[in-house]
Image (cartoon, rainbow, N blue to C red; front, side, top):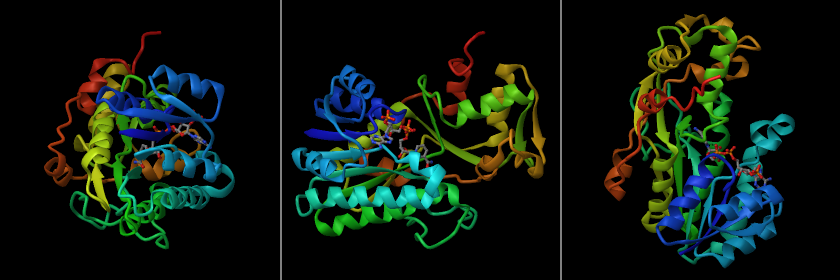
Length: 313
Ligand SMILES: NC(=O)c1ccc[n+]([C@@H]2O[C@H](COP(=O)([O-])OP(=O)(O)OC[C@H]3O[C@@H](n4cnc5c(N)ncnc54)[C@H](OP(=O)(O)O)[C@@H]3O)[C@@H](O)[C@H]2O)c1
């Protein structure tokens, strides 16, 4: 299959491109700079120069391909327009793809968030069948950015697009994770001399290795049914205290509960404090059944124990 991939220079994208090429697919990656073009090309993909701002270009790229995997995101809009602006731009991108893919049955696989159905009200692990909260709901804003996008993508199934959403947990780990939640936790721990967690630290965080995430994107592209959510979950929920202790062991720093008002301070978790208190276990049972997908990479705690998050010096 000839696959158009966006986000090929981010954290997840290179793993997805490599996975597709290893499986025999031809990949064209979007690149908006010379550096991005060189990186995409080095992965063995063809380069299509353009950006997420160029909707006609995205539409043409989708029309030229047998399928699309979209994992780029307009984070540049966050400082000025907030999450609503990011979501609005992403939605326009999905509608541009739809114009090219309408009635073709071609696959469109887009990244979503494991937090999109909400969490505190569920009282059980989120499943693939839980719909995202509607765009009008206000719910701890941060992770809801994708809801309107996810709803749009799922809706494209009714227009003859084999569209699906791969919901991603807040922690995606790998040896190339430079800007995700783990490096953030590690950086704050080093700065503060303590690795903190809220309350008793029993709130659960799911996680996946970037390589396992990539294999699920490939499977959804190749054989995922239209209009479905898939859960890229390897660890269904690890108590945050255990993650803090694993980091603390490596850094030789104590792991300790931190009061919520301190967590909120700038220089501590600040606006991310909402994220740190999340309790969002998620199930992958439907995804595993649908594809026979089995995460094969180290789990989060094993990957922390591998040491690559803690280079010497
Ligand atoms: N739980 C969650 O909600 C969760 C957790 C993790 C990831 N995710 C989602 O998963 C997806 C992949 O995440 P990631 O961590 O791999 O992303 P990332 O490392 O932040 O990479 C972002 C990618 O988007 C590209 N990009 C940004 N703006 C662009 C533009 N205007 N035109 C063209 N390309 C543009 C970047 O290209 P450049 O190199 O040119 O900047 C880069 O390839 C994202 O959609 C992210 O939101 C969700």
